Each structure stands twice: as C-alpha cells, then as structure tokens.
Image 1 (spheres, rainbow, N blue to C red):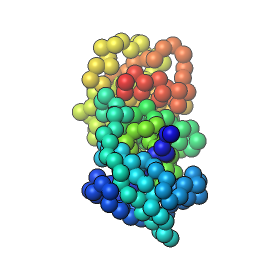
Image 2 (spheres, rainbow, N blue to C red):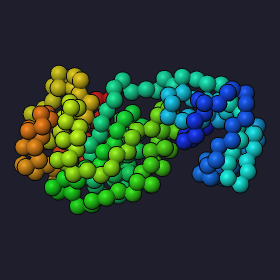
Image 3 (cartoon, rainbow, N blue to C red):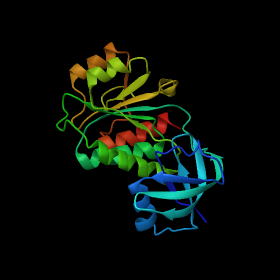
Image 4 (cartoon, helix red, strand yellow):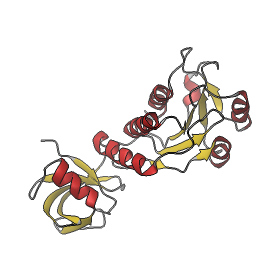
Length: 233
C-alpha cells in the first residue's frame, strides 16, 4: 500500500527512531485529520528537506500538533542529476502557479521570478506559491523543496547569478544543440510577447546563450516544461 507523503519544516533527522516526535503544525494536522482522514495507528512518510524520507506512525493529535513515532529512515532516490535554476518571467497568477508546480515536479532546485520589459504583473503571492511547491514535492516523491527566491529585475538576476551557465529561449534564435546543454544549469523563460532587443543584448553581455526550442512559438508554461526536461534529466 502506497503511503501518503507530507513535508514538515520540523527536523525529523535530529530525532531517534522508535521515539515519539511532536510536530507543531496546524496545516499538517489539518491535512492528516481533515483532508486524508488519517488517524492514530496510520503510517505516513514525512520529509524535511534533509534528503531522507521517514516512515512514521501517527500516535495522536492535539490542538496545535501531531505526535508520531519514526519507524524507518530511508535515503530518497528521487534526486535531479544537477542543480537547476529557473528564471521565469512573472505571468498571470494561475499560469505562474502552474509553472512553479511543474518545475517542482520536474526537479528544479531554484525558482526565481523575474520582471522583464514586457512583464505586466510585478509580484507573486509567496505564501500561495510555497504551498503549491510543498504539495508538488509531496506528490512527486522528491525529498527537498526548491528554493523560491525574491522577485528580481532581469538585470539583477543576471548580475547575481552570472556565474551560472544559462540559456535564454527565443523562437527567432538558432536551434539549440546537444553541446549547449553541457554544464548548463540555468534557463530563462520570457513573458508573453517574448524578450525585447534590449534584453537579448543583455543576455549577450552576460554570456547567456540565446537559443530556440524550435520554430513554433510556445506559451511560457509550455516552454518551462520543455526546457527543464532537457536540463534536469
């Protein structure tokens, strides 16, 4: 029987096996008791960003926490082959949330929302995105969460992460080759309307490759999935 997985910000690794552990989390309590209808004696998998999964038995609930017994510690093998940075232009709310969800499922390590010349929406709901990321990690089997960074202007992202070999995707550019992906760990996805000439020049100045995924014009969320599938795996 497949066990449900739950992320906890509380360190499980610091606790001994077969000893009680009380995790204060109203959200986790709600998920277990009200959403999944789990109770005392049921087993689940907990993970805490340490790279391990912990098989745990629910021992009980109180008003603000859940008590477990940790039964087994397992090394998680759902690990991406490289640390990948996704620089994604902010798009409309539902679409950006979908991007964060799929990027998490695909194994991205960092999500950096960026403001570009053609970005209309300038902010994101971090609380909502963090919840989506946690749930996507629970569902996909990975044991670590991607880091969600603050919103940055494109120029600031290029300066801060300049040491990372990256590709910006642009339909009018030459199509990528296999060697372009070697040691590449960053990908820039533009907004609706694409990159401006000024931004393409910025990429050139910061040694970011500009390549095409093909002649077709992809929606931002589609480009994210296609690009990450080539970089992460």
